[in-house]
Length: 82
Image (cartoon, rainbow, N blue to C red; front, side):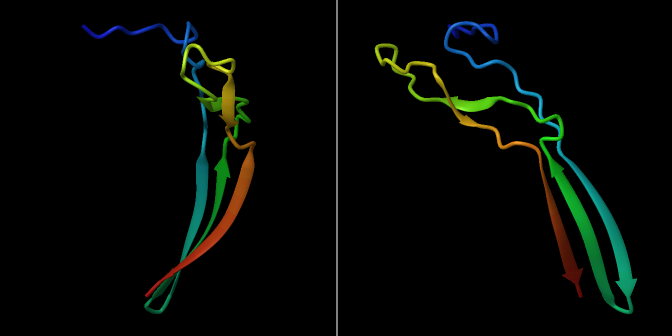
């Protein structure tokens, strides 16, 4: 028998909705392909946690949120293929 609990109930973290996107532009120079891109991570700026401090029921920090999701951020990058 597998016992499951509904999200948000005892010993479960609430649902997390993350949105990541990438914009990319490719260029070709002779036999070399060059790409520029921007990654946008956590666009919804979700304030959620990825874990808990302790899963031991008798612990004083049982089920306390830990390891928050990083805030909204952008990364620039480039790649060269030849």
